[in-house]
Length: 201
Image (spheres, rainbow, N blue to C red):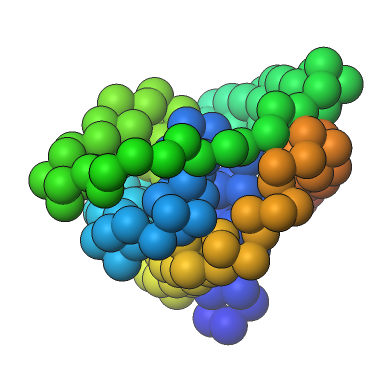
């Protein structure tokens, strides 16, 4: 049970670490110290809902369709390999410094609308949570719930750390090389998970 929760926690963290519009927005809000708690709760809460749907829905679907587990496992492997390659490509293309623009603080409603659109309109979030985490959770029967709780906790820990720790990272991520290093780490992590998924199932 603990192993399932720990693996869910680590896989969730690895997937969320990938640089994207949502994470860049959370980082920016954290650097600006603007509605940080609301943004963090919106991101992590959305992830928790999607992870729960993936863990519960995938289990029911895999019972009705026995071949679905293998299909999703190899689909997850392909997705992770491709996404890892994208991260390596981004790293070798060079990073971009994140410099939050000044100006008046945005309203809470505007900030929440932005972060919810960045979250729910992103097709990758469904692949990561519902499909990929759901397929991996199915391998932890009868401890799928523990895996899902660990994954949801990983999301909360990440967004809390990103949002409230961003002020400490502001000087670092003004340097494009910092983004390059992070992209390389994320790419290597994605490929490592893909290998584990391919040969561990």
